Image (cartoon, rainbow, N blue to C red):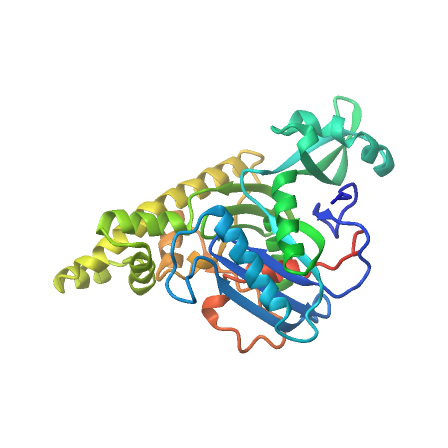
Length: 383
């Protein structure tokens, strides 16, 4: 399927597919361990939750998680979505999904000053020096931010996005195989930016926030300054890394490691550690140490991003950190990060300000963040 990626959706550069005009769509976040679905009605400040769903990938007959091959995951994901598509009336056919990872590149670049029409014709040549992939094997999105003058020449600061075609086409194949019609392929980071703006409408314009979306197979990091993602980076250190470390250190299988991660979490305070030692709870101590060893890698990555951002100017400071994704539910993760980073840290609740979400379990809030951001997109809302 051909993708028209020369235009933009809203303020950011997703990868829109032409031919869709209906206003009804549904956000589908396809992860490695679960599929998240959200449908919203209304608009900014007036969103209302219509439906949501969280379905595990890797289960066997609805039982405990097992390891699946990529093809098995793809087939199970398609089956989950197909069953959901036929599960009720009013489920939109138009779907908005997203991509991320090492097959997606987001860069802030400086192009020669061109009109949008001129840039659309020359984007491949302009973008090629910044993209570490074969230019013929990627879809490209872009959005000019502002005009500048450099060395006496007019230029424009631009957000450039490139996604490998095979990754995008795989998303499309899954959606079409389930009976959905792909309307927009976005980027996880930009979906989260939509959530950030929607849930924190009263944020002071000078605030700069870092969001860490800690999923199963990867963590998305983004620094948002005045409503624009200035830094975007993905890391393979994520929830699955924690689970595998518990499996290795405690000698348990995957389902048991998942249960232990949920049951114990992190021991942060001196009192918690002392109590565990006094009770001889070696299991809790082992789980906490395993989680902490991976969490340390995440904090190092955040510190590097904060330092990198700060090097761009004396006024470049991070005010707050938000975490989301399934691993945000790990007990004491928030106070652990706050202590290690010496910054305010909190969970990002994507349903803040959205009506009709009272029945969504709290543990699903961080898991559904990307899906909520995708649900805020509308086919044809390119500006």
